[in-house]
Image (cartoon, rainbow, N blue to C red; front, side, top):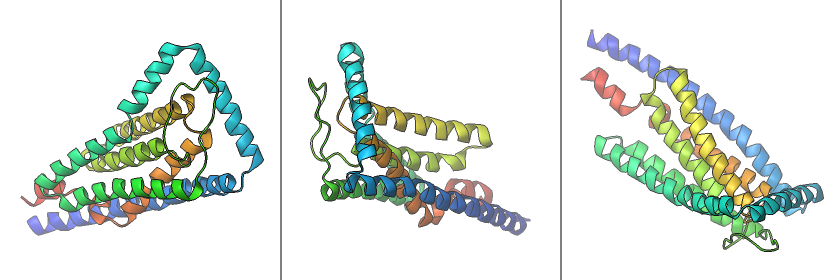
Length: 238
């Protein structure tokens, strides 16, 4: 009876693995393409993109100057919900998983966010795009502009956390909620960077798409995350 249950469980795990690998491949394709296009446009100084970026920057900067209270809120929020906070959370979850025995998943999570951060720095150094220069700036940030480190970091971290949570969730509703929350945090942080005038609109879009693409590529190389969670297996085989 135990063998039959284990066999059925392996079949179920294989089906879930196939579905999630398909999801990962689709995510890589869907999110890599816009990043590559934006990279080409930025490097080639594509005029329509530059004009659009400048238009969005001027409009949001006008709003920021008109409402100092809201601008202060954005400055606090962009730091509080920035990539450092999410990386600490991912590391904390990874430590918990390591203690529970899910060591490959823990290592996968930490390596993924580390690679994402290093890749962001490398691309910034290569592209070396200047940040917006606005009259009466309401915030500042060091380094190059493309792609946004905040947007990329938060996108990668929330994607990783969502993947870790999925095996514990039953039904579509909680899973949709998790993805929606992850997307909401990422979009909000991306918005704060543009609204504060420290990034162009295309910077944050590139950061978000590349951040998700990196996590999806990492998922393709990590079977324990794509398949059944080790804790679930323990419950069945115990």
